[in-house]
Image (cartoon, rainbow, N blue to C red):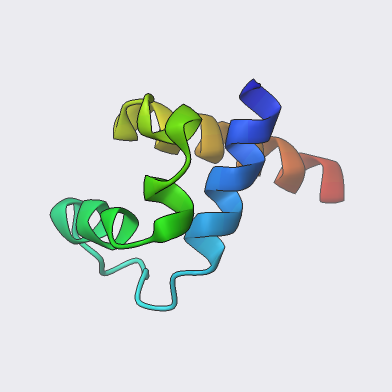
Length: 68
């Protein structure tokens, strides 16, 4: 379940063109809540935003290390 949530969340983030390094936390939350892929996924909705970002960032760090 953890891998699935991480993969789904990562794909959702990648599909939001307005999401950049300048996006504020509240803007990001609203962008996610505007995404049906996020709001219709009960597993993702049951997680706290901070937890999802933490898991996603850890996954990205691992992937980046594996590419080198």
